[in-house]
Length: 243
Image (cartoon, rainbow, N blue to C red; front, side):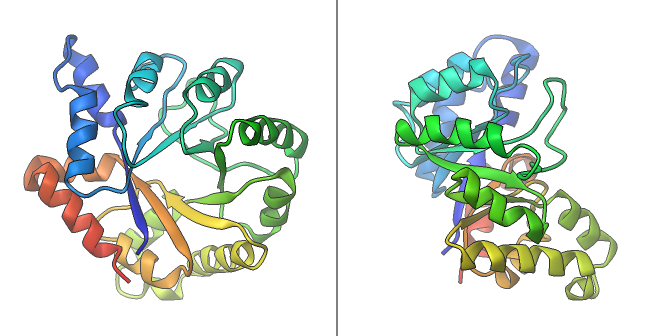
């Protein structure tokens, strides 16, 4: 079954809005694991408007499933990742002021940078995933750079799914996702996915993207938890990922 990694950035956003430590990010991470999630994802940004760098260090001994740290490989980010040594690091080409991730890497243009970063992460025993748009031409370069996995950027899929609820299987865009995943699997890259996946569009994506190892979901899952409760929501998402 495809694994569910829960991004807890929004929990930290809520905490930071009021100050103090409510909700407690560390406790929520432990509860999310207890409720059945397969991993915890964080995406610290330079302004620390949600997850703080200190949170990342504090989460390391707490997370007992898979710890995935994602972000732009700045000097400070890499220093933190190499010290924390999560199971996975997902490289995302975000500018410092980005509200949220909006595109994947051009693995051809940034080949040299990615190769250097990935080599350093591998030396620390960290699995590396590259955030990637659904473009077949970028897959081989991701492999050449040394990536272990790609994470398909699913923002455009989620947007188009909402526009074409009746027959999303006919979308040319979705063929791009299928073809990119097929190429990745053929050359030995693992396949992750994330961004704007939710209870409405997740099942279709899961059923039509072969070899999907992991999805990372935060915003929609935490929003759903306001209505359904955190434990129930995690189980609802896990149900969408069953084979």
